[in-house]
Length: 342
Ligand code: SF4
Image (cartoon, rainbow, N blue to C red; front, side, top):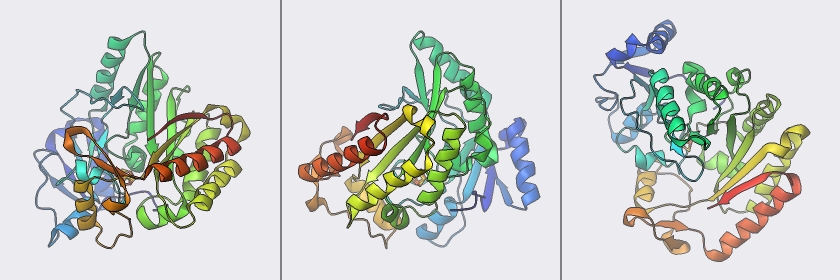
């Protein structure tokens, strides 16, 4: 996706129009001539256009619902942060392995919440509870927040809010390059801006509707030059023909783009490809032509929560992945902080 996302259809909860952001979004979509509908609740959007599930899924992914976040109790978000901060739910991307396909089930449309002040106040209460410890908030647990932020600027407000906070920290990850409006935010080093990166083959085949690798890397360079602490999540690490060169080339390109003075405060997280049986079913339904390899017999079974185990790579493959990726990281970014491999 080279152009920033514009929804084809927008729903408003009537109460959302009592908030300045709700009003602003309505004016914006009226000017753009986008079809506007109303819904009593952002949890109950029914009758999306389309003749079958396949079509309705695609329409939902380009539908934006503007609502109010009622639950201000935050979920925990280990290992990367203490809490998930809920500014939005859903994403316009079409990554075949996206975890949202299973977690959002019948509601794959994108929701944005206009009661941003209340969400930030709730975050401040969590920070107070844990003082004098630092409290980290992850803003991308249920969406790719950067992908819609050019419309709402909610993330920008949050970055500036945490910029003023002594003990609060913000972090998020994105597969989009539309970062320009965030470059002048007064972050004061309190926000870690992470990009999800992968080998070209993986992005091209399994991540339609997101930004190409070159664009993500270019955006990471801009973010680094704007002084943000930077991070990369290499996920999912996927074995394919020529994967060693593919990931090497990815590191090489990061190395070519990132300014030297930004390299002492970079983090890396590595996540190998995995799937569950329910996820496999949903992927095959939503992306029937996918080339994604989902053969349980080729994988190792790892017991999981609620009896739903996941299929990960065999031990030797896992060791091979670790050896290669750690090696590349150390070669190109010897001062980076490695956070975890999972
Ligand atoms: Fe899912 Fe992230 Fe892809 Fe969006 S960009 S579809 S949240 S994996």
